[in-house]
Length: 261
Image 1: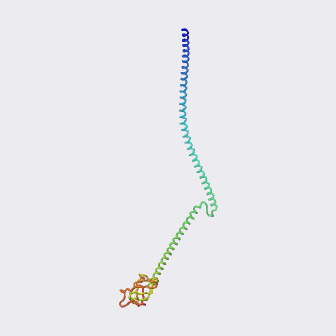
Image 2: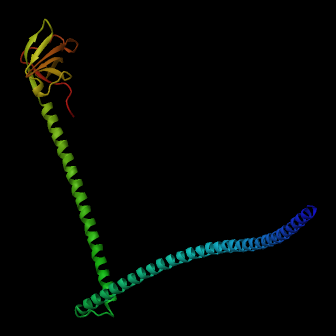
Image 3: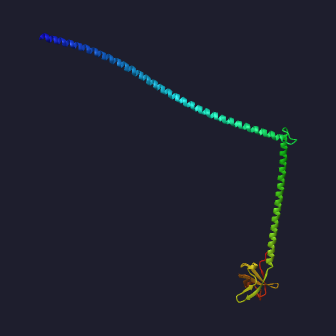
């Protein structure tokens, strides 16, 4: 029994040793594998960092290239605008050249139609001569216009003077006609001191008109207008103006006190 236990113990120890050996080898393999994996991970990580750096550097390069592309695009646009401008200027020059050529052809045609005595060598002198003649004619025309204007002014002044004279004559005529007007006393009211004469507003008598009563060559007295009614006038007799012992009577002559001069 003891031998059996010893054998069993020995087997157990051997088994334990085998297991320990196997476990040691497995642990060593696992450790070596772990070291390998760590080295691989480090290598991959370094490679990843390198790739990241390369990507960053590439991104910086791409940005720089983009800026350069934009700059080149701007230059290209400017170049296109310049080309368009040059094309426009070139077309303008061509149009001007065509216009000048057409004008030259027209001038040549006109030169061919010039009358005898004119030629391209003396045309400038001829034109200057014609301009001088035109200027002289214009001066003469201006002089004639001035003479006509002076004559018209004199005529206008003469017409105005004639109108003034005619107006004065008409005014004088009316003054004479008014001064020559005379009326008659139609009735006398000695109680109320007024008279009635045969003249009214148709003859130019107004409430402000001053009248004299005349008998022969003698002044009887003055009248002050009371009322003007059509062809009759009623006037007060100004008693303070009456000559001694004389009063107005029907048939006496009545004239204007204030005559126009």
